[in-house]
Image (cartoon, rainbow, N blue to C red; front, top):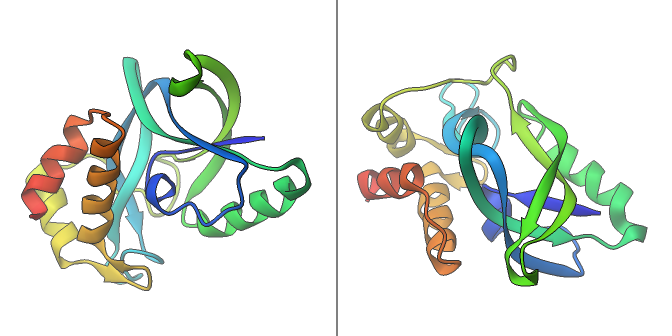
Length: 170
């Protein structure tokens, strides 16, 4: 089983894996349009975290993890709990960068507009202001943005939305 991470899973997987490598999915872009009432914010003051938005011609870079077969049920249970704030599981085609663009079927969690914590589009300035004032049990929201931007730079991936937001939150 492969798991594709595009948010905190990029830099903090906390799941057992046999292999980890940079990868991307096509037809999706990352946006900070999901509210986080349980990790990077509170129910009365949610933070903003990443989700995927379908967009033709776009690619989203992240990290792919190959999970041991014996651990797959436990990993899915752990990820279902971790992503309980409005995310749903979906299967996608994942392209592994280090294996000559090898394609695998992977599991990804996406927060769709129909979930109760979905915040939707906003200007980068509005998103940055919310990030700067948000903190939850997993830490300050700006740390999430900074660590994601740093991890993407380390893998030499480009994401204008994340990088612009990281500049705004300092």
